[in-house]
Image (cartoon, rainbow, N blue to C red; front, side):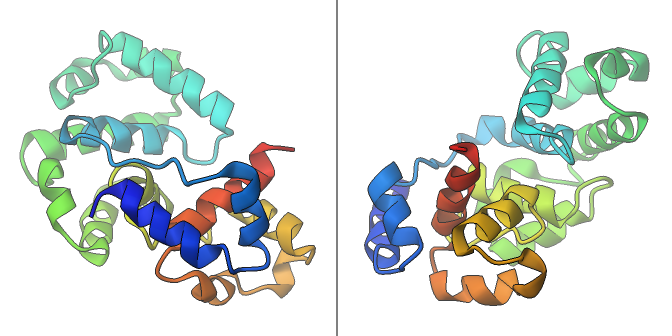
Length: 202
């Protein structure tokens, strides 16, 4: 099914929700679209760069890495970059090792990145989490923003936590977010997108 059709169905379903319904009126349809296969590797690098950083800082560092790779991040180009070159882009030593490890795994076909879209969400999570430096959050970002999978809810995301607290006007500690988000199945990705909007629009 085309992403636009999925989000139309999601919008119709979520419109009935007393919290998300008002956000749909304000922000319209979910704008997430699946990315072309040629961007899968680059998007994983982007997600690793963005770990525990604000969106603005992550974007700046990622663009520097991309510039070092002459505008096209590939496993070959990343492997050739020295750690100090990546450090100058703003990456920590840990993240330098993570992106290089990912590049090596993709180059050697230990991770067949271009066929990930053929796997289930659970299979993709298992494949990606096996890579050094890729945890559940990073894998979930790939599922949501690269593959546009419709039913992912990243409970460990800082923005989701802030957005839920603001939306529900409740202390997040008193809320089991995963359990609460069950009401938005099978369109939790769209629900998360709207919840991020609550934080982004402050």
